[in-house]
Image (tube, rainbow, N blue to C red):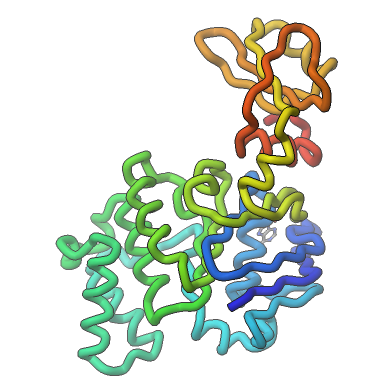
Length: 295
Ligand code: ADP
């Protein structure tokens, strides 16, 4: 399967252009949409999930015209929105059974099997009788994935799934997501670089509605090889360094500032050449759009 997005644009009625001429081709596997808050990730995902209209452009899932054949897309789609509300008084098991009915699984036995299988997969079997309102953030997200997987979707969209999870919950969630990928197109949006590193074979950086990079994490990093330099400076010198160099990121460490800069040639002032990482890629790309001083 392939998802082909061409020249997609969307402006909201308040004048905000959330998606600007976005073109992307996604194959099976985990594809990450990385960008800061307000970049347009949810807008793009909601459009692909047939929940809102685009102004221009096209989206095709193989031969299905996603923007027109909404029912056909919905039969193949699993979606976990950013704000995933649950009915607090209903148990996970009952809710999944209900979702299975909505997805058209009419046989009771088949539904029971599917619900049991998914509860096991997301490790909620022993909590299946508990009401959803008592679930922790991580459990809710795992339940969210279970409902998104109902009915064997070919296209799965998960919007900022790791936001708000603690490190252990995030790890469990990574393991769960990484099991899905193989024969399905999975789109995951995040502002967390580690999510891309851990999960995604391909990704795009999106900022102010525009795609700034698309490719593999390795390709992205390779493009910065030999161009990232680091140094620890005193906090008060930062303005001077910002004036002179393209500062990619700063990190406070025991009262001192560790800075990384982008430079085509070896800078003077005893900087040290360092191995670039995906965070350098991210900050380098988005700083071309945003004021780096505010990052
Ligand atoms: P992200 O998911 O990357 O945080 P969004 O797609 O939610 O970004 O938002 C992109 C931009 O569109 C933001 O400026 C946001 O305020 C605006 N926006 C999102 N949804 C709406 C809406 N329904 N009406 C008007 N503006 C919106």
